[in-house]
Amino acid sequence: MRVPGFWYAVLVLLVVASGAVAVRYARRLVTVTRVLRRGVRTGGECVRVETEPYQRPEGVRHFFAFHTTDGTRVEFEDLVRRSTEEGTPVAVTYDPRDPAGTAAVAGRGDWPPVLRTLALTSGFGLAAAGFTAVLVRGVLGGG
Image 1: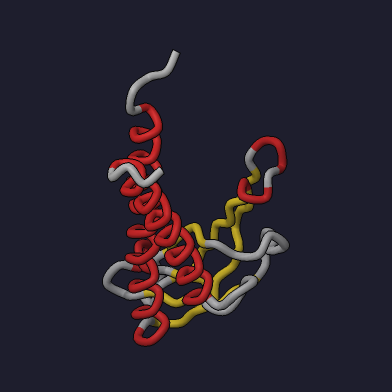
Image 2: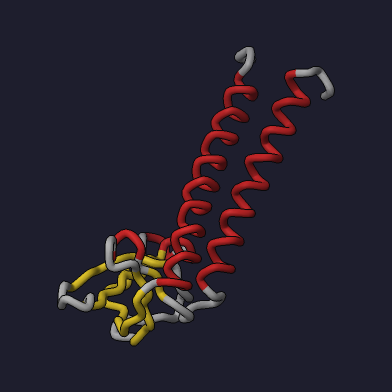
């Protein structure tokens, strides 16, 4: 039994989901770029590595901690290479007005923080554009 419009609904969900992730990473890209240029730099370390079930590569999460200039301990999650282990020292950059919301590992990982976030923004943005093109083509009767 075919459900009329099912694939259009699936495409709309894919457009919305990939577009939302692209916007999220675009906002992070702006934050990381600003903080790397004007933020405060300090030392930090990897305090926890969490692995999701089934040992999937995308299932590894890295958490870092550092102390602000006033001595407050801040913990945050960031994308880094899989081989980063608990206790690994890192350079952290942050905005003193919002340390937890702007903290970024500066220079430790597969790619520099700006390129890594730019790649994610571009990838999800292209996915949203591609799903939109397929949806428009289907709605207009081109295939």
